[in-house]
Image (cartoon, rainbow, N blue to C red; front, side, top):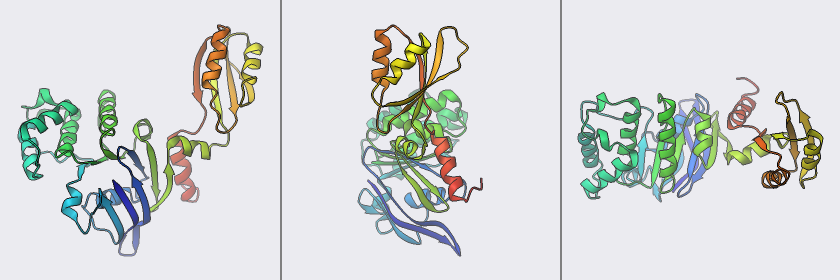
Length: 315
């Protein structure tokens, strides 16, 4: 759906984007990350046709963004960080206007009704946009991006300025849209990318420095493979039980103030998942598993590790 090859953008002597290449397939949510000044916004603007590249190509659903801009753009729905809203219009007037502007060939009434249902803005359809909450305005911005049912969605900071409830709602909407669209999602909220993205691309100093799933990046960069579990049961026996599971390399008993409960740091062989076996064995002995969490690197850890490393240790 999206293919970027050797993309370069120079401003005089400054190279903002330096020969990057990546792809995003049908039904894939791609998280696009980078620190300020890394070339992320420049890349997003080239993808959507707002900037021309110095060199390289961008293909959207088979159409070159430079050679066939109208056809390429007709396959893109774009939500910039600041939604392009005319706030003195009602939601209905605005969506009608965007429908005409995009020369949408789909049946107007039914198509707009479907979009309003998906984005959950039916109840504010007749209200002035300027009187809506930030969350609803963001949803209206998302609705305009969906007009024409484009196969590709480019979302730049879609949850900026929203409260926690609105963030969860927009995140859920993005996951729903990812089932039927190719989505490129840019955000500074790394937990948001980690929650919805199928794959992560990190750009730094104009170059791609990582391209993989968050899990694979974590496994590749973590010095060990550990998990921390909290179990109610006899400490020594629980430790021996865990140590007896195939793939467990080491068990360390940690401190826990709760009576009858102990924490265990477990080091696991590469490529092994012990969670189901662990749960099954503990359940048979009626030793409750109270919590379990991975001690692998989070996306935030990965992002900081990569960008600091690429900058020679400077934050």
